[in-house]
Length: 345
Ligand SMILES: NC(=O)c1ccc[n+]([C@@H]2O[C@H](COP(=O)([O-])OP(=O)(O)OC[C@H]3O[C@@H](n4cnc5c(N)ncnc54)[C@H](OP(=O)(O)O)[C@@H]3O)[C@@H](O)[C@H]2O)c1
Image 1 (cartoon, helix red, strand yellow):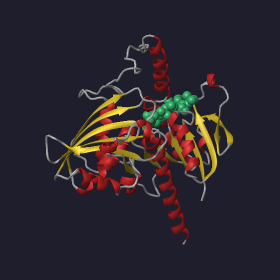
Image 2 (cartoon, rainbow, N blue to C red; image 1 turned 30 degrees about the vertical axis):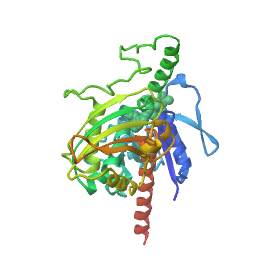
Image 3 (cartoon, protein in one colour; image 1 turned 180 degrees about the vertical axis):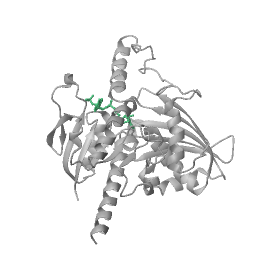
Image 4 (tube, rainbow, N blue to C red; image 1 turned 180 degrees about the horizontal axis):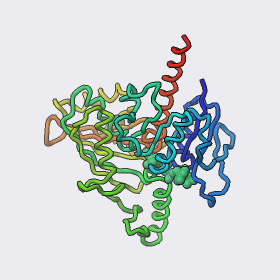
């Protein structure tokens, strides 16, 4: 079975990565629509798919006619405008924005962990936050096999996580900073070049940022532990691609770093890069362009024998966004093929 696919936000960082992944993973694409804004100053645009140029079209309700899979890789407001028209036209929507992640009736899925939330009837599925995906990939086997008492996370998130504009501004700032001072943002926010910034997304009333609360809300929903004790500090760093997180976890019973490594080794999608004697540990440059979540620096918490500290790195545009979304699409395609085969038998 092959599919009529649309990508809304195709020209963005996640959209272009999704296009690459449909090609790399040989997703059965029958026809492809690339959709973006109708801003006239963008001119005529094409993107390559399987060696041929595909024209980028402005999004419209008609654009979703005869589409069966729509990957949304755009901002919340854009997803909110087009999710219902796309579903009404018969498309299943996999949404990368945070617009629908916290709705009880919308599955929030990391396929290695909770693919069972998907069904042949799912017409709207949310893709989690880019840092959250790597964090829950690392926590899932610990939660399942040992039990988690509490988690503290500090993230180190790359500029591409903020979209094309944040990446461009950071790169321009680095160039300017080599000549003089990196420019401050027009809105008064601190430059990212030559800096680290402990604020991603807006502040909530509790003093946490929304990015930090996304990690809290989404980890609970994906792991299926509604009262999971978890808090986070989310920090933007002047790295192009690849988010890292330093995680401190307190478990229900103490396990050694080697036992934890064994649990992670048996989890699909995780790779250990952890050998202090050989100076081996994962960094964003190691993971950029890859789909696995890398874990290293595993050690006992010096303050509690049931605690472990470790370091997790993933490509925010791939496993943190497009890879996970395409994995969801693959699973939905399998489920609908199985449902129609059952219907015909
Ligand atoms: N970057 C990451 O690591 C990451 C990870 C997980 C989730 N996400 C989420 O994924 C989404 C996309 O992120 P991104 O980093 O790819 O952003 P981006 O690089 O800024 O791309 C945004 C895309 O949305 C399109 N767009 C903007 N306004 C539009 C409108 N009014 N109508 C239709 N299309 C419009 C843009 O098209 P034009 O070219 O026409 O402007 C572009 O294709 C966001 O919700 C983000 O939070 C991002």
